[in-house]
Length: 139
Image 1 (cartoon, rainbow, N blue to C red):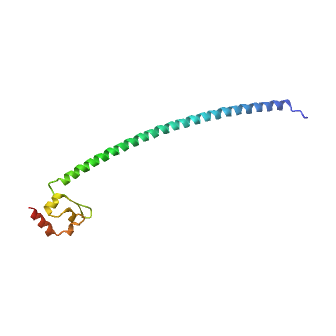
Image 2: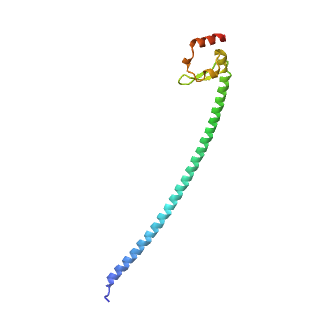
Image 3: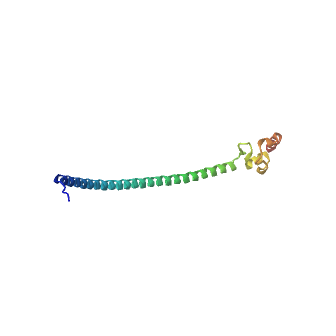
């Protein structure tokens, strides 16, 4: 068997030692990277949890506010309806196309037509003479 020169053996031994050191350093670096990655993932998860909690709290507050507003709207609508139905004045409401959609009891007394007779009709479907006559009879 041929002999390996001593210089080559020393160089080979140095190369192996350098490779082992590099491998050890690589393992340490890899372990550190895994540790930092796990910490980063934990921080992100914690931040996501905090954000999710904040979003949940804001949603709950918005839902509560919506319910409060709906209650106030219902109360305001109820008061408005009470005043419209109990007004001493005739209340007549038309839609955008000019059809009657509300005809109060006082309007019935003043003009002589029941709500059933006028609701859904356009204003121009009434004879002005009928309107004036009904108005004058009311006085």
